Image 1 (tube, rainbow, N blue to C red):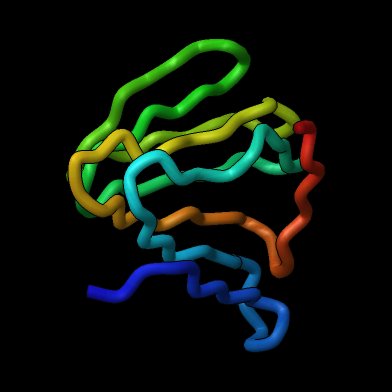
Image 2: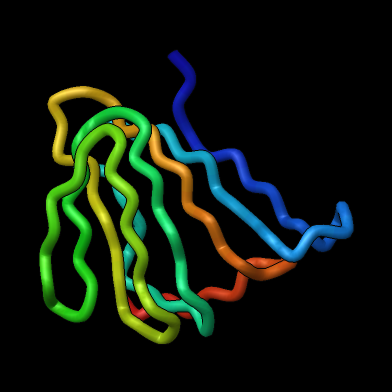
Length: 100
């Protein structure tokens, strides 16, 4: 099955939405970061631990989570299998500040 990240920036297509389609192995996830806009995640397969403002939330297939703009956050694939997640950015381009 495929793994890695596919990105879509809406500005290239006249859309105000950008997204990442992420497939990752256990233990993998982005560093702590933030955006000036809210971000919505849809977990399609696998199990993830999300950290937002020092709060941890476990999520699995079918779960939808939202983090507010300017909130430091990250997530990690908790295994045992691959994580398949959609990360929706309500912006025509990605704006991200890494904090780690």
